[in-house]
Image 1 (cartoon, rainbow, N blue to C red):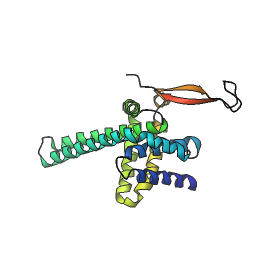
Image 2: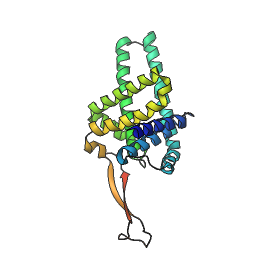
Image 3: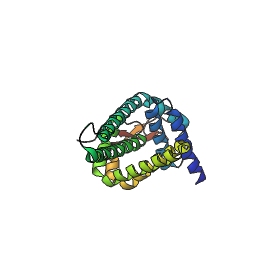
Image 4: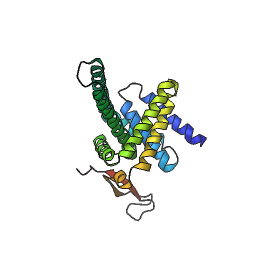
Length: 223
């Protein structure tokens, strides 16, 4: 139990450190999600070399995700300020609609993070599409993920020094909640298994010892 807690805390600290330059935040979050998913599935962290490879491959698409998130946040802040100051009509109703929009965006983002961790070789676009479909198809899971994220944010805001540790536990909670509340068919949507033959020490072919491995290949969701 203590080992698990310390491992998750280390994941959170690593994600926080790697995200310091901001432009690397997307890659850091995906790498942390992959680590947590492997921890849940296998009971231990994957090799450092594997995680470093995920981080490097995620730098460019992760940068696009960071830009998108910052843009959305900026637009939401401008909208809230305009509503609160009366520059645009809407008042309380407008703020309520904005709050609901934020909750929906948080749910989709949380599901996308889970998907990126579950499918290390999958694309960010596939993860986002899956997250959107799943949020609509499993509203209870979406609401639970929003609640978990809100709780983690509140704890981090009240005790800022805990931010790195909270990140690790938040990633763990997102994966666990998704696994518990998202129906199995939805979790597996867009996934197919393929068997890749690898040559063994004594030769190649399907019958060589240790020659086959099952890999997961993500496919786009059906419209």
